[in-house]
Amino acid sequence: MGNNDIELEHRTEMIYLPAIRILSPCLLVAFSFVFPVAQVRLALSTAATEESAAPPAIVLGFVGGFVRYNDVVHNEVQLAARLRKEYPTGTIIEIFENHSGDSAYKRILSLLDTNHAGTPSPDEKRNARIILYGHSWGASEIVTLARRLEKDGIPVLLTVQVDSVRKSGEDDVVVPANVAQAANFYQAEGLLRGEPEIRAADKTRTKIIGNFQFSYGESPYSCIGYPWYARVFMKAHTQIECDPKVWSEVESLIRSTLHEVEEKIPER
Image 1 (cartoon, one colour):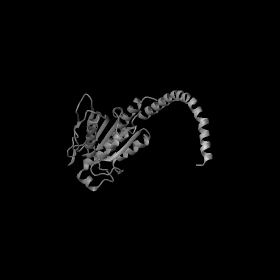
Image 2 (cartoon, rainbow, N blue to C red):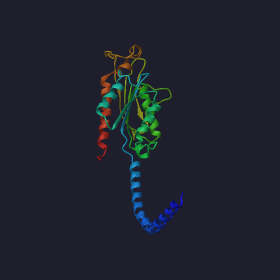
Image 3 (tube, rainbow, N blue to C red):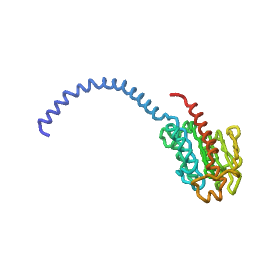
Image 4 (cartoon, one colour):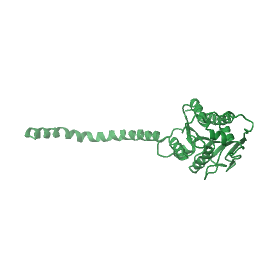
């Protein structure tokens, strides 16, 4: 730095330093007014971020046996497709294989966590709107999933079991108390038979809509697309899965429950 530069810097300090000393109290006063406003805005922004939107209605279906989740031959998958067309927004409708209970559980927690905090808040859990349905091992799995959600304090609006077959280590008979309503459709013929009676762990909290029996002894066999071994060795068990009357009842229960959910949502 040359002498001219040093002299220029010195002159600049002589001009601006007094002005800064005079203005600094004014600046402090100004900031004292501005900063609380900034704090309020920050608090409002934080509150808006922390406030959770209402969790979506969640409908999860489970296929039985070793059926793939996307096998459109099966009524569980077809039902989900129909519901998706009618409920395009605000309702999540998905299908899982019966051995994917952990994935379904994690998916529910993720969907409930609307503020993306990493885990659902107590309010998000309390406001959950969940419907579960399944066939065979899939029906057994939904009861197990509901029981797992009960431990987390997450309610379930409805479970629907179709020819429920208990999986090893599971209990598909006793419906946990976090389930508001439960229905059971079954047949009692052939080698593989569905659970004939489900019951509530707490009758004051869970309504058993009914245990509805179907018979296929004299019915024509029309399950086109099903594997030969299912048609031969599990005829009645397969027949109830492809029976349009059964799935019409299941669909009606789900739609009715979703309708009740929509009516209870307050207008914004």
